[in-house]
Every structure is written in structure tokens, then in C-alpha cells.
Image 1: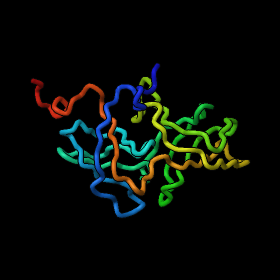
Image 2: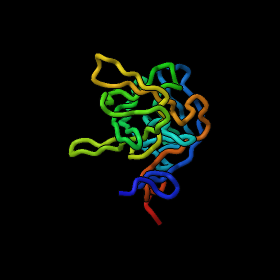
Image 3: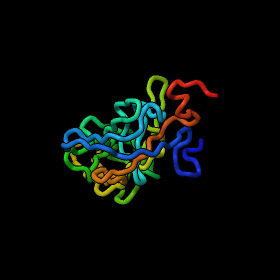
Length: 188
């Protein structure tokens, strides 16, 4: 299975560039508003990337704009995998700390080292599918906490996307869905 195309985007996606036009004023509810919406093929739950890494997902859409919940939002959780070792976990924010994400639920026996890359795992099962396709870079491991009592390790990540200074992002829309078809306008 091919994970990414030659341009670096996951198979089955078509990136739509957008500009950030507004930001949430607090660290407790980390969102941005972008200048692309339903008429551009943007839909809820589509991944949003910025400067080489996952930034968040679309949570609200209007005709010409959309709201993006960043991966630093308190409600965010992203299934992820440490490369190349394959240890899996869930990336969650440390609210108020946009430079320190946590990869939780990584089994203690799985070796995770500083400097390794963490990407979206893109899992699929018979009942549920990940919102994010496999292979989107999330961040780099900066520290691993080992606790004698816990069954899991806590892995700290520095996100690849600079979430405090977002100006331009790309929404990964479904490939092969031109804006006109996505908006319900007949072709031709």
C-alpha cells in the first residue's frame, strides 16, 4: 500500500490551500478560522496541515470559511505511530503548552527514542476509521517519561507545525472532488 504521493500528501487526498483569517483568543479552546469553505470542497473532519505537519481538523464549515480545531485543543486526540519502530499511542495536548504534545498509551516495552518522528497511524477496523490518513507527520520526540508504576510511557513531542504562528494551511480534501461537485453543482 502506497502511503504518500510524490508530492508528499497521503493518497486519496487533494490539498486545498487556505489563509488563516482569525484565531481563538485563549489557549483553552485552540481554533483558527480559514478563508476556504464548502464551495472549495472543505468538509467537517478533514485534516489540516501546516508547514510540514498536522495542525488539526475542520470542525465547522460555511460556504466560504471554516473553523479548524488545532491539535492543541483540549478536545483533540490523534491516533499516531512512532517511526520506524511502530509503537502506537494517542497524541493529546497539554493545554496551554503548544510546544509540548503528549503521546500517551505507548506500552512500556516499546522502545521510543528522542529525535524520532511521530506520524498519524490512519487505522481502519470493521467499525471505525481514523479521521486522519496514515503518514501525516505530527512531531518529533523530545522526551520520554518512564514511571515504575505505570503500564505506559508518556512521550513528549514538539509539533512540526508552528501552531502559534499559522498563516497558511492546507486542507486535505477528498481527491477527485472538484469544488463544483463538492458544492452540489452539476458538471458541465
